[in-house]
Image (cartoon, rainbow over all chains, first blue to last red; front, side, top):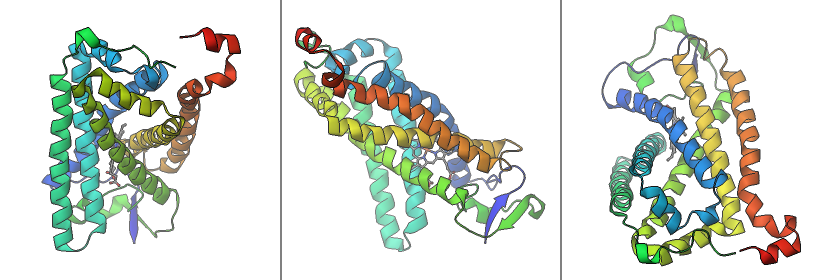
Length: 138
Length: 152
Ligand code: HEM
């Protein structure tokens, strides 16, 4: 038997990690609406992918605003998405040892990809002498 | 528990019975909205992993990085990115619907209508974006021959 609510949606009020997770999906989701839509429009509508070259990134990242923007997008999307993966594993994997393994691998992936993304963003210093073309040659 | 897309917290803190209507699982719009939300979310996450790796090529300089941009210029990869765009649009609009169900007093009453709006918005926004993404791949079709040869 499954339920649908007739009033406001039932919220988790027990405290603890699942309550945090529930709110985190919604708060990060609300922020991601703006970040993701803006990112898609910049990269696929106002520019074409063939012009998102090294030179393009260099000019964008000369402004700290875009590094902060991209870091927020990275952090929120990765934690939101990995939390979703955690819940999916929770839903389908029954064996305790398999759950342990999958959860540990997920946690490791989260850390590795968060560090790789952050490192790329923070350490980017354009090679000014050889910045390459603004768009790919056709 | 498709209608409000909830997790184990339901077991911990059931809301007062007066606010709940029990309903059998019949595979209605709630099931599809939930299933699409999960698949689109996991699909976007898979892309995010790939994307973090391709962006990390920046650390190896313009030669290496632009090589990965060449990859995204292929027609096949452009078609794949259409799948990403439709997943992102659906997940975003349905995410807003979930938040409306949870936080807006009348949210759950209109959940079904909102699912229709989610699907319509996904398709309506997708069409112009698909045009922008695929357009450059078909320049040889839409451009006059002389423009193609004298261009960059
Ligand atoms: C663009 C704005 C976004 C919004 C508004 C949004 C909204 C939401 C919400 C409200 C949930 C919770 C559903 C629930 O409690 O059952 C959710 C789940 C999820 N989201 Fe997002 N999200 C967004 C972006 C993303 C991105 C970028 C990713 C991937 C990197 C992602 C991956 C997921 C996954 C995997 C789940 C779990 C699905 C499940 O439990 O079945 N989302 N999203």
